[in-house]
Image 1: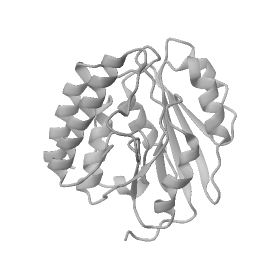
Image 2: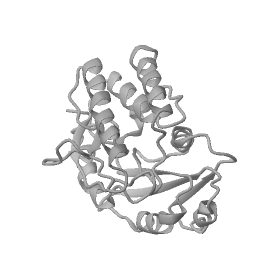
Image 3: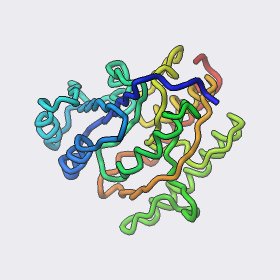
Length: 249
């Protein structure tokens, strides 16, 4: 059992944004409209100088009372954006939210329950719920890409589980929710999608063992805007694993 949660219950939702114009207005409208009973929510939108008009869309939310806008001069990766937003977050808890439509905002409530009760300090929204089977990603237009990503997911999940002595099904989910003070004493350096590895491993090494809660997930393909690089990014993940698992916190 974790220590009692801080009060009041305040949540910082961090939204990194880069080249998401096709779905951005819909996604951000839903995010700013989202409320959770008994929680105060601040929104941090960090835009990385997109080339598709996303910045202009983001700037329309400048006057929203719950929105803080951070505008980067150039794209340095999702991890860099999230780290910059973490430095500005004031909530007692943090939730990382992508700016596409893969994840369901209606899952906020159940993800926050173990944090509000003090049961846990770290929650993962697992895309592998009951009956999900092998395939998390199902790209009708790119089945080979989907198979390769699903296979890599389980291979890398096994690496995480064995090396940390833990059993997780979806350590790489974007929905990571945690007490902000759980980051005290941790140094985060990764700039791209390897950030997901770094923050997960370092939080677990620091004693914050996550609970996985099944969530809704609608994966999009590379043709629909997925940004992972099939060959380059896995190499950065392995490097991040080695540094985060065996290096200093």
